[in-house]
Length: 393
Image (cartoon, rainbow, N blue to C red; front, side):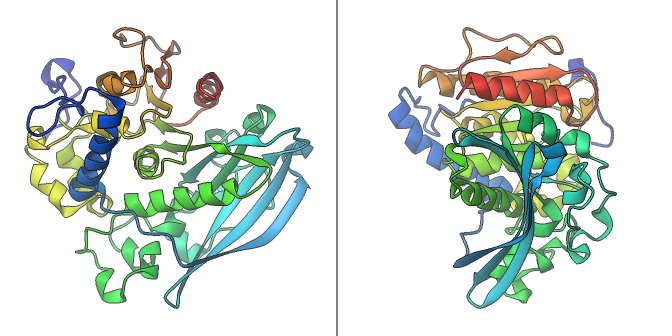
């Protein structure tokens, strides 16, 4: 397919296979049956799309490089932690930037997620340590350039702790990313090649999100049962996969995650399976290439990935001008996953309709909204996230 389609009349793929239907045609009819089916589907996604997430390392040591109690105009505690990892004599590290509201009367909820350009680019704080330049390479950006994507000060004011790490710290987002990735803890240099597609960037990044959750959960200032995972774009795919693999996440937010995230593979709209497997092969299992030209033959679609978070809360977000990520398709996946939440007495009340911008469709533990604007994370997004989390806590 050599062109990009943005016409709904040519998109197709609106009928998605139900995750509640077994390969033999029988239908899941109870929450107890879903638990077994969920494990099956998670393995299917590992086999066909994302690969397996690495295990925890044998040893984790936290180095508190700096703590400030006057961050964000005196509203927050800021911790900068280098996370040292050891496994069978091999060593690796990555850096976490962590904000905690001051003067807490009780443990607070938290949101973890990875960033694109390095920790200093996410904040107005001028003295945040740089990430290791050998890891970020050409992807590092100037200080504060993406502060609006994180809205740390606003989220601190709403009572949330926030923690992030750079994606490239864990797996450099490029063809040769495996060589110096977190997989080096578990594999020999000979296995860390471009050809070894079973070791995917998405699973490496999801592994990092899980480690962040574990670190926050061990701190008495954080409510370990209210730690959410959030991700934008390729990191939205990552957040969905992290949530699918770690049921200790309280819930998940997928922002503009698009193809192989919330958008259906069966639809010919915006970025397609053909495009993404050619452009970013290091994100996915090699087996996914077999379906690049025939996505309808995949044994699942992305509504099943969304359903792997059930019955925990899931919020899917889209943007009106982000046609590449297929906003209507992301809505279709969310609506098609609703039957799984309904097994638990949750989900939408009736059949949801594609909402107008800034008019969220929030059910019980399942939500979707469309924001006016481009492919980004904005203050409006964080307002929606806050409202959804507070309604489902």
